[in-house]
Length: 145
Image (cartoon, rainbow, N blue to C red; front, side):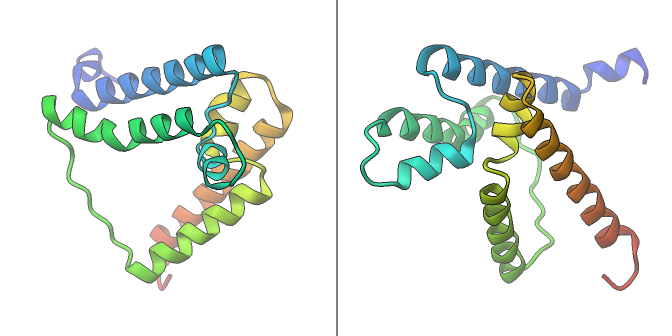
């Protein structure tokens, strides 16, 4: 990697995004005592009887509005989705089932769990990553899939 490559906007955007995710996770733990696992935040929001809905709604609204705020200052890259509606629905259901089996999602395990040294989170994240590697290899590099 050339030093001049570090000024490329993709590196700056990636670094900035990572810092913001880490900052948000730290602030949520410090001020709310909660882990920034998106599946847990959304799942608990949808459950009746949970009394801590305001911060969950605000956190999720922040996730939804962030691209629009970013777009005010910078151009967003084009989004190209190569999957059909049925494929996206199946993928979403599989991700939802995976978060149930893993007792959390990539944000909860990968960002927050690993930083806390959780062995369960490290194992879950390695499993997520391995499944992603295998899926990309099968769908991009093997003919006929």
